[in-house]
Length: 390
Image (cartoon, rainbow, N blue to C red; front, side, top):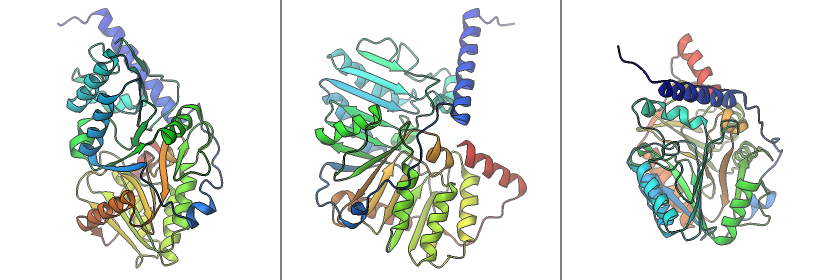
């Protein structure tokens, strides 16, 4: 019989305790978030479009996003800050580690803050001996000039962002893992401006309010305020012609109600959800049934994207957009720290034009759902669990 060393037992027990603690924090959120305001986006945001959005770039899918991330790390001179939910020990994970170590070796101050709950989604790899690089000395732990923080009591932080030299910020839906890099469909935003990177840093790290006026708005869910759902519903309620939503996980009742209201008042609504999901599949089906049963079928169309889409994107009237980390779920809307960009520009602006073209292409390659799904009792239970757990 194989003997297990005492140190291995202690390591496994400690890891199990950390995961259970993170799960309790995830479900019950004892740290809490700030109140949900009645408004986030001003009247002027909707009535006046920004003429210059040159500070923003839309990054579609992992190759574009990680090419920019790796280049920014390689060019860093003074500081790199990484906030991440999941970080896997795979090809892209190791490339980011190598880049950060090289930066630290040339004197760059590197700070990595990883959400503890994200470790749950790395558990399969950990069983195979592939620990997240934030936990190992072969990865980032203990490396000179690199500070790693994984606090199981900090509350859930589902946001993902990179801040480099206080001159650029990259944020959105992508974790660090090969599925985000080369397999799944997703979006990130690049701010290339010292002024607005400073504002972004003050917002996400110090809970300072976003400056007003500004060419775009970055909203957060944090200890100061829970802003993102309010802003999304404002977008939908202010739509005059069209609403396109591409999201991975959609089950928040208030957002569903806003979508139904838009369709019932004659707005063209298109919803794109993934056909292949890593989780939340039955909750998505339940949402689709609810939308198709809302009596607004003529204006509302639901599509299934043929592969896994991890997107968190909303576009209204072709010129007002939201791109970020927040899922359309009760947990993301109310109990997880999240970051989302809101922007109103001209239809010809490169950022919005690229987003609009990609969303239209996604609709074209997707399958329209013509009738509600038939869900048995067990399926409905899975849908409720998925809605509130993920």
